[in-house]
Amino acid sequence: MAYSIKQLAQLAGVSTRTLRYYDEIGLLPPAYINDAGYRFYEQKQVDLLQHILFYRELDVSLETIRAILTDPQFDEVAALCAHEKNLRQERDRLNRLIETVEQTIKSKEGGETMQDEQKFTAFKEKLVAVNEETYAKEVRDKYGDDVVDAANEKMLQMSRADYEGMQAEAVRVQELLKKVSETSDDERAKLALAEAHRAWLMYTWKDYTKEAHAGLAEMYVADERFAAYYNDMVPNGAVLLRDAIIAYTKQ
Image 1 (tube, one colour):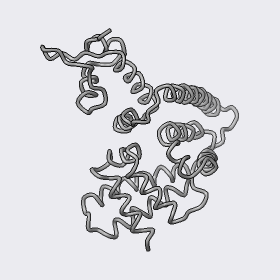
Image 2 (cartoon, helix red, strand yellow; image 1 turned 180 degrees about the vertical axis):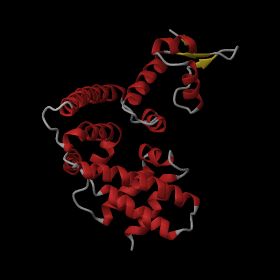
Image 3 (spheres, one colour; image 1 turned 60 degrees about the horizontal axis):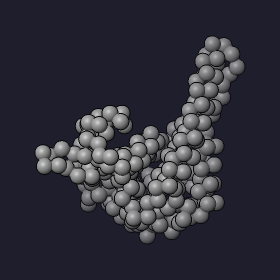
Image 4 (cartoon, helix red, strand yellow; image 1 turned 30 degrees about the vertical axis):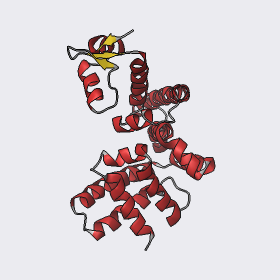
């Protein structure tokens, strides 16, 4: 069965404008366009749209989704299993977030005092879930399950101060990346960028080595899903960050 763009939009609960945009960026081209210029979608496109919406529910960027779905090794059944796992985790996280809100209300109303760490648990769990959904396979293949599991555990055990510090360093990395993009010959900005990135990493890394830092930087460029995150910030962002880190680790 073929769906017109209006029919598919109604079926999926999205706008026709969204479907046109997905076509424009190469994320979801129609199966064919008829002589009158109307887009039509078949079963393959319906299934891909379902995947797109699953990923969007987990806040994965459109560029990253496109890289995932166009990967020659993309396995639809495996992806659906991963969606189920991550959506169940997200459901559990939301339930815990509801509990956190309820506990906060009770605390404000004079009930049991709530520890600061409890207030941020659900947010940290969200970071772990999104990272697992988007990047875990490549990182686990490169560094091993023990390293990734230790990083996740360190993130989940973060204090409020560390959580806020990690978020601040992420913002600093983005700001410095923009500065390097605008002033490509500013060596001090490149050094500051690499140092900020190291500081951000150490909120979850157990140990630091220049080799691991450089290897991660190369992965940012080699894997489109990683590259997309930084390229969304500035043009060619992944390469700019990689070059800054490589220069930093060679000092």
